[in-house]
Length: 424
Image (cartoon, rainbow, N blue to C red; front, side):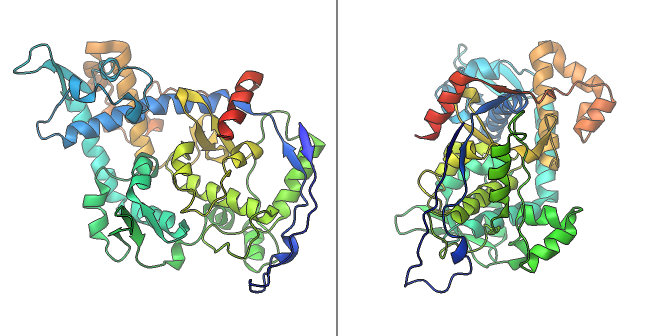
């Protein structure tokens, strides 16, 4: 562990208006650099959901196809787009309960794939959930736009987050035109399409941290915070052994004492090199991850939003500096950032209805992987498609895969990999 102390006072600029946080804009917190610790439970979740996301994207691609099927040739070059580390043809053949393989009518040696009846039924249930919870999706999208510096986000930066934010397939064509008072597609000066917020909605400008404190037993503390008499503390869950160290405790307490700056508030008067700005960056990343359904996303997706979110160049170092809040995973040849408080014993704390359906979707995938051609009959016998939640699947004696060990494991070689990737 390396500790650095900074005490350089940041003087006010004569061009800035009076700043209520001026007395806090200095480097006084001890810089504690912690080792990266591998969490097997969260790594397992990221590993399984990578396959789940790839299968869902293939399902959507078949739905969009005018022929109702896709060919092996059309998906051969897509493993990177799907986040896969194996050939797409090998992947899609793993799950016969979702994808039915048949030869092309003209080219007998060309494999084709269409959705099974089970996959079609799951897709109908997904569409139903999107319709029922459409207002929730609209609110989530508005919150994302309200966090942006110019209240707009390029479509090319938003599309990679489609799965994480729970947006319906083709949202720019079907969802956005239905709510012209909330947001609209506009063309930026560089010719790219952007989604722009049309009206600021004060009722949405409450962060997940503020809402959780308002609704929890800490309601009195939240009321004091609204009166400006106290701060809000981020929930922290340190890897085993770190939380008990005195130096870590001192650093954590000093950090928590800093004022909480809502990610929906302007940060123009905050010095970019101050501890207060660092806590603001933590708050922005915490809020954005809280808006995702699985409380995680790929680090590169966040990097593409750096300028829109008004984040510093090396903001990704925050993930390794605050391991009690974030977890950085190196699984599946990519880097994924998770919110620790979003999971307990290997499961989401507050699962969205869409994540429950995805659990069902993954169970269907796994059944096809284990039982191959007998999987469809087994699924029908189990009645899984009639169940709404993973809890009901457990009650009926079905196997829902999860890793509840929650063990943290410190590995020196992977620690160096995390630090190297974090400094890219």
